[in-house]
Every structure is written in C-alpha cells, then in structure tokens.
Image 1 (cartoon, rainbow over the protein chains, first blue to last red):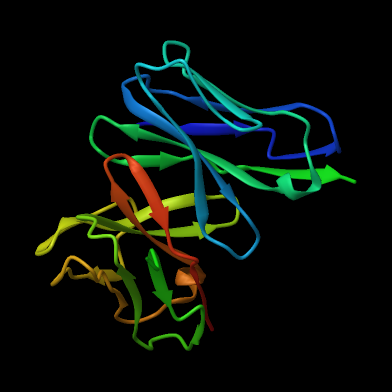
Image 2: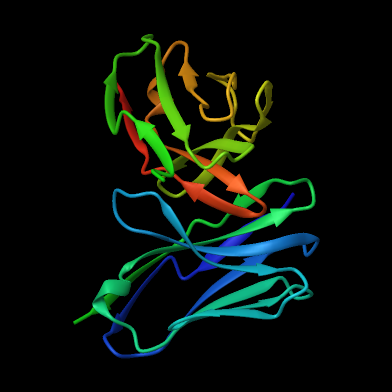
Length: 111
Length: 110
C-alpha cells in the first residue's frame, strides 16, 4: 500500500531564506507526483506536477525535484516571502489511478 | 470558468440527519472525486467517478453515497450523519493528471 510522508509537519523560516520541503513515498511505481498549496479555510491549488520520467519542474521561485528510485521529492522555495505561508502537500498518482496525499507541511515565513 | 464549486461552505447537522453536499464543475472534466480532510489524517478519498453514470469507492466510502447523472455534477450524500463524519469535505475534478479542487465544505455533526 502506497504511503506518502512529509517531514517536517511544521516549519518556521525567516523571510528571505531559501527552504526545502520533503516528501517521500513507499512505492516507486507512480505515474507522477504533484505539489499543492493550501491556505487556511481554502481548497488545494496545484503548484507543480512532475511526471515519473522527469527529474524536476520549475515555476518562478519554486523548484520541485523527483527521484523515483529512492521514493523522494523535494520542493525548493527561493527567497521566501510572508505570502508563502501556507500548508504544502505532495501527492502521488499510483498505477491503479488513485492519488495518495501526504499530510502536509505547515510553513510559516517570519517577517 | 468558475472551476469547481461546492455548496454549502458550512453545515451543522444533528446525528441521524441526512444531507447532500453539492459539487459542480464547468470544465467538462470526466473525472470527479470527493475527499475528506481531518487533522492528522491528511486527505482521504471517499468516492470517485470517471464519467457520467460511473462511480466507485475510494478509501473511506462507508456512510456516503454518490451518483453521477451528468458530467457537471457529483453530489455526496450522507444518509444518516454520525459525529465521525465531522470533517472538511473537498470535491475535485481531474483533467489528465492534474487535480482542481473546490473550496471545501466544513461539516459538523453534533
């Protein structure tokens, strides 16, 4: 059974710093991995989607990497801003077409 | 495009009451799904549909019913609400491999 783990559960970082969020999964037979952002009281917004054949995707200050063989992904946020404060979730699309989510990392950027 | 629209945003029920959470999307996506989000549990799939007339169970389907009579709508029914169903419910549609979420329904069952 696929399990997706995100560590740490919460993170506080001073504004301007670069940071890395981690995601690991137990079954490497995935189609893709997706990173989402969730603001309090809101739904999830897709940030980046990495296909299983890709190593990384970039969007602005965000860079997501995927190492399928080791079951790991990272989300790198450059030059963090208070507006980046949110919960970040990763999710994998399994071969059985089910999407499995991690529990998220709550990120707080300190002004 | 409104995207994925969920109603209501908030609901309080008494144990044993029934209700329907509404979900509609205007993107003509075939795939739609319902998740619940609980503290410490993450998002868990309740039911999903790959097209009109087709539904299937997810990870936690007990206590919930769904139907999909049109591509646009995917309602979630609670037949007899229980306190264990207190949660935030999200509807999502999917195009290719990308998920699009509604803003959620916060449900409390007393």
